[in-house]
Image 1 (tube, rainbow, N blue to C red):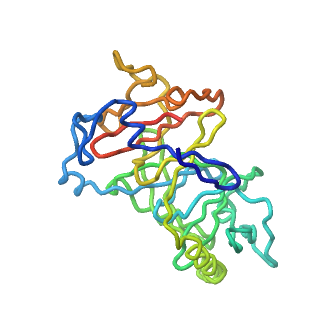
Image 2: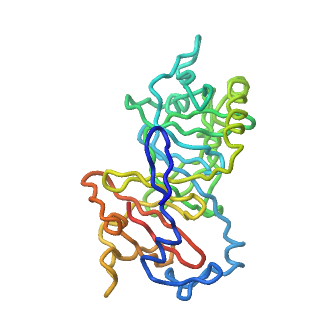
Length: 301
């Protein structure tokens, strides 16, 4: 029933607890389910041993990179009104309108010595110390929760030379993909970082003023021709939907099957069917893996 407006678009807020209860008809007391949906629960000891980091992944010049969610303020469409900086380098796109001020913006591909694309792309707004900066990327991918033990330091070979690199580590995801993890602070040379800190510090203060009221962060997604949002606090990760998931006998029509998420069986709910929305005909569908108490389920969007 709730709605809010972002970038001029009305966004409906999905009540996560209500969606899980409506899908499975399971009453919970004190945040715990009377029957677990995702296999055996993970013990507190195991959770403490296996520390994880939530990573936002995106494409830069055809390669997969990621940033820790903790460093990301928000992701917005790349603005068209970027004013170039005088005597700027190739990576410096300039400054763009942001909230009630301006934001320093750089092209991440050019910054890393890669070939920048011609598409507008997305703008990932990140915190760098006491400042904000916008990193232009080609497209967003998924949100991953990667075990810290799977993250390996980047070889010195990747960060050699005079150009900025900022690859802090690499993690293998699945059997055929490697994600390069970036550090916002390490992306820039010291003198460039100092300038960004000076240009972006005021924007961080502006954001602080804008968020004096209670705020909440949402993951925005599409169902048919409409836009919805889920509170980020209830989201475990976002992955690409499997093409042929195993079906569940006698399951509701909107339950498309189950998926294996690192040894846990997660039921998948087709939110399009649940809300009566048309299914998109183009683009890979995503699964938003959510958790509410002991309940865990994936919403296909």
